[in-house]
Length: 78
Image (tube, rainbow, N blue to C red; front, top):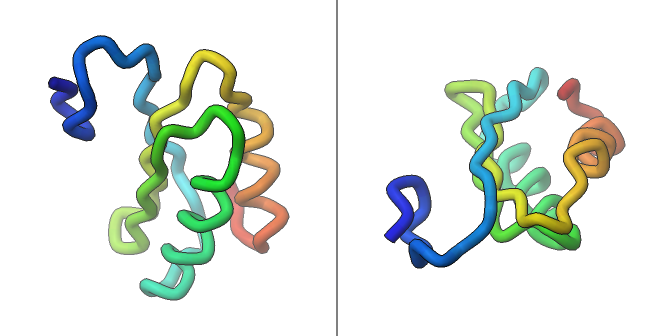
C-alpha cells in the first residue's frame, strides 16, 4: 500500500507537492481539487490552503505542465 495515499503498491504514479499561492479557504481548495481531479493522468489531488500546497498523484500519462496551467487558469500562482 502506498504510504502517501493508500493506493496499491502496484500503482505507477508519482507523488508531487506543488506550491500554490492565493489559496485562502476551503472554497479555493475545492475549486483546485475539482479541476485537477478531472485531468487525464491525475489519480488524485488534494489542496491544502493552510500549507499552500497541492498534493497530486501523477500517473505515467500525466502532464505536470497541464497541472500547473490548470492551477494558473483558476487564478492561482503555481
